[in-house]
Length: 306
Image (cartoon, rainbow, N blue to C red; front, side):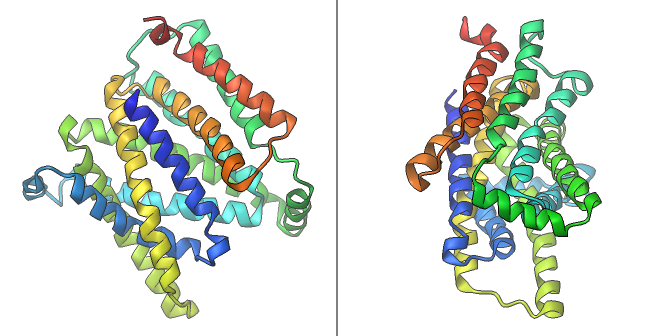
């Protein structure tokens, strides 16, 4: 459970850092691009044998697909930003959390890499987990809801459906591909190699988009956005790094790992947000947290009984 715990802690740190961006006037997209530079540097520091890169065939199928996955990282971050701005923060959170359905279903029925026989209790736990995540995303803050309502009123109806749907699909596809590609093309000891290649793809595509925006829109790059991105990159890399190690520890069972990872992240995030930002939970949020604990027990009761 050590890898699980570290992955959750670094993921929560990632959220808290991004939460502070508006306060320090950090451009989110610029920071996202530069965070991948820090990701690669962190990965290189964690790579015990840099000679592994000499064995990489950069034009091979596995490497090219992994580089393309890095592009998906950037696309997902951009969709999250657009959904939050054009629709609402609640819709963004809900779409991101609900996306765990995709890797879970692929893990159970396509890859069939679950490390145990799922029972009715396990499947019921998955359903309860989705309900818990949905309840945890609901906000009742009047100021936020009124601001969201203005945005929604001015946005085309189809945009309100398409953006959350695209965010849902992108986030779920990311997690599914991470699980699949790391197993199919990379040996167990090549976790950092896989991630460095994926982040390199994110650098190539993200930097290209940023350059186009600077040249065509006249955007200015500020040092605080670069610094924010470099700070963001460390927990970003480590959260995925330890998530992959957690997956490997549980036989790459996405059906077991992803629900518990998402739920624990939600629980710890709620506590951290209350302690640091004094964010309060409404009654539905609290009920969602209770259901989340129940879901964890139902999904993992076989392991907990060992």
